[in-house]
Length: 130
Figure 1 (cartoon, rainbow, N blue to C red):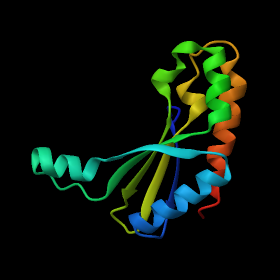
Figure 2: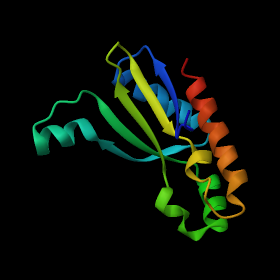
Figure 3: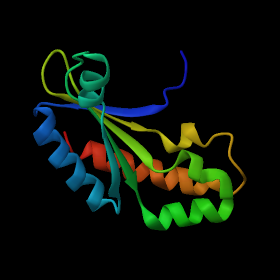
Figure 4: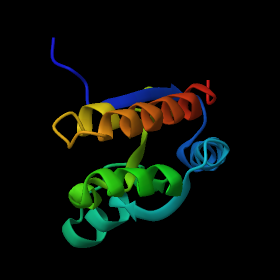
């Protein structure tokens, strides 16, 4: 079995309500949303494809980002932490966040502690959704 690169939960709410809850849960853990990508709309406009709700939120915890940048100036290529919201075909919404420990496993010394804390905060935020 391969290591997963995401932390995933499924919530019963529709994507719009799930997004509101995810933003609140992230904020409680010190994350703000710096960007959002509405993949559903982009694929509809550019390709005429209908994939259902699919949005990526770029979440950032400034204190953790600062520590990561201090440890490895190239880390910005992996920031912010992406959190995906997608409609689950069985109902509800899947919320999948990039696992910082998996994403930074090849990073510079000093990133392990930051990645561990970021993972714990994201895990706490997602766990609070259930």
